[in-house]
Image 1 (spheres, rainbow, N blue to C red):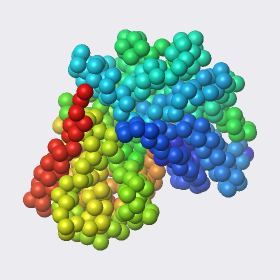
Image 2: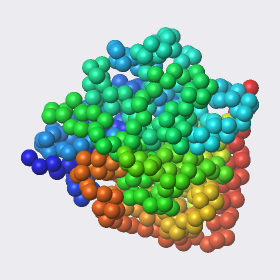
Image 3: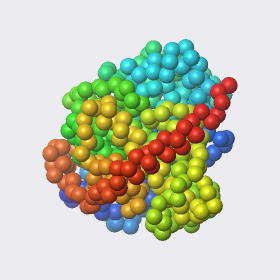
Image 4: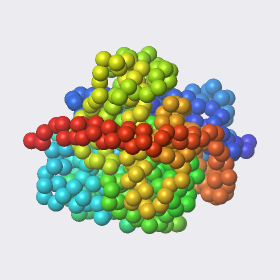
Amino acid sequence: MSKKFIGSLDQGTTSTRFILFNAAGEICHSAQLEHKQIYPKPGWVEHDPKQIWDNSKLVIEKVLLDSKIEPSQIASIGITNQRETVVAWNKRTGGIYYNAIVWQDQRGVSYLNNLIADGGIDRLRIKTGLPLAPYFSASKMQWLLENIPDLRKEGETGDAVFGTIDSWLLWNLTGGVDGGVHATDVTNASRTLLMCLEKLEWDQEILELFGIPLKMLPQIKASVPDLPYGYALVIEPKIPISGILGDQQAALFGQACFRKGMSKSTYGTGGFLLMNTGEQIVHSRYGLLTTVAYQVEGSPAKYALEGSIAIAGASIQWVRDNLGMIKTSREIDSQAESVEDSGGVYFVPAFSGLFAPYWEPNARGVICGMTSYVTKAHLCRAVLEATAFQTMDLFTAMKKDSQIELPSLKVDGGMVKSEVLMQFQADMLNVPVIRPMVTETTALGAAYAAGLAVGFWKNEAELSSQWKEEKRWIPEMSQGLRYQKKHFWKKAVQKASDWIESE
């Protein structure tokens, strides 16, 4: 039976999906399950790794059952994942030492402040491309080693290991305690604050700084390897796992941004703007990150500039679940569309501090400009507009760092279905915003990587030919109004900044 499909296991911050794509890069079958968000303390965010693994198995099983597709028809599986989130487990017993500490989590601030006081926030930027921030995996690992009994001792013997979510899923898929593969790819490794960007290796000096044993970390491999990472043993017959990309790099890959200067913005739980900088490592002067875009084995790595915002779609979930202002996520659009503007309200969703380009871990969320005129609809619109404002900040920094005028912006992710948000985004950037036919570009990127590895697709040129525009939004706002809105957004950010006083 011929190979007709590529599978993509897309493990995100709020849910896990398994999608089958055909040779044209079209979605054929999919299944999705949400997992619980755990908030033990203000600024702490956790997930249950076992629930994530169980959901991963369930969505794979559901797709195969509902589609009636034989596993033998699937050429390969790619994995894409929420980045920076850390799991610690025992590879001998399979036991989990603690919940997964999620990328949004802020518990590493105190430890990092000591490092910053001793050498500045950018003391590791030349090596890693990253500032010292709790967003990245290193301080999460350090906290686990210092606070979880027996973890360090068992890590030094090689029984306890660390991994980002891709490593956790790969290990389980390939057998777990019965020979599971402990590996990651260069894109996920580049988000830990522990990898040298130039050498694509764990940096021993940084490991010593954080007190992390090298033997606890996964092997770093290419995103598109010559040989599979391993085989998915939970499926019979087993299927090769031939591609891994962190979610935002996967979206860049799925948007066919293979050439230097090409960029995309993803609107998911968080918001992420990436630009391919080719084989050049570009160090930011305007608050962005330098990261690995992807690597095809046998070729030099491609790098990217990235702007990351912690809260985008998560703010809609907050309005729905915490405030009860809407019953479904889609309802926020109908509320926002019922008013012409936000009524002067500005919302800064700094629930976990502010990420790029500000890097203010002590910031907290604020709502500014409230009057008795304001209704629920105005607040809903302000929540949507906050994502566009934050992306505008990243877009501005990206142009300064790259010295490239961005003539348009490719967009993807769940929030791009919002007409209100996309039009406002075009207005604030003053460039066209373009949505592709396939908006699930994160899952598509992982599928592309896995498919390239096994020859399902020939090359990047073939993938580029599949990209098709579905819709574009043209700027309509006057320059004067745009300037006014930018001015008040900056004022609101200032109100949110430095809310938590350092000890």
